[in-house]
Length: 383
Image (cartoon, rainbow, N blue to C red; front, side, top):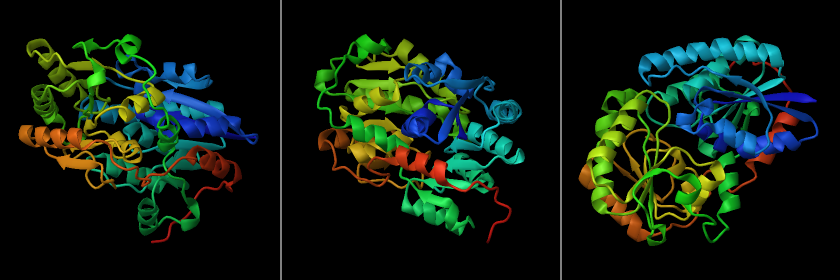
């Protein structure tokens, strides 16, 4: 039985790997070891561990590493603490293989710990392009990894150009599309969002349509986070559309965005905006699917929404360079640009589905690769 240790660090990580967790857990030749760390354990960021436990996964270890403050300094310190604590967990669990996801600083901590302990490392979603520090982290993790599970053909090609052995690169598509492909067939939203999840803010009549807004800080622009989110808040408020607004992630600048939202909520009469901390993956995809669009800078607007055909208004530089479908309009942090793009997407309606990031089945592919791949540590790279 091959022991596969998957490290989850934040709410996006769970949706990005959930279908693979199920397939690994059900595979006769694999034993799933699930480690939760950083913001995935904290209530203010959705306490992902509750969703994991509700889905009946056994958590092998909880690793508290997030140093709060949401600055560049705390991000660096959290990465260092993560290496120390995650290395201890690997020493206890003795996994045969470690899986790390995407491009966050906790991903880098996982990769460094596994690499120095000579544990074969699998990286999910390498080879993509984005703005900010994320791309540097993703490429660093690529160089530390032994197996690469990529979402698109272009991502695979980039890894080859970086010098990675083609025999270690597998195009699986994106596991988050597995969730989208399962929920998109359901015609109606089966529950009332406010009754189920509460939130704070205006009382919304969602039957009139609604927009989803999710704006994260950009680490290379973290000092501008409050100003940036305030521009988006004012544009959305003045459009007078129903809006479901989600709290940001834990990157540097998160406090600036949170402060901007709180000040705006206190002093502005935004009766058609309601704020939520977090939705579980399937419910979030359902909410997106039934919306009139998503605004902000989350990769969900690029990935899952391309498959679902949900109109996306991508604001700022956070997703710069990422492959995208026709459902995306890019704008800057400009009040008029944001308003104009939201109106256009609201009136456009849903786009045709784009299978750029896959059409389903990624989780099963990933489990099969993890079960069958020959485990070895890369000893050299060709350039």
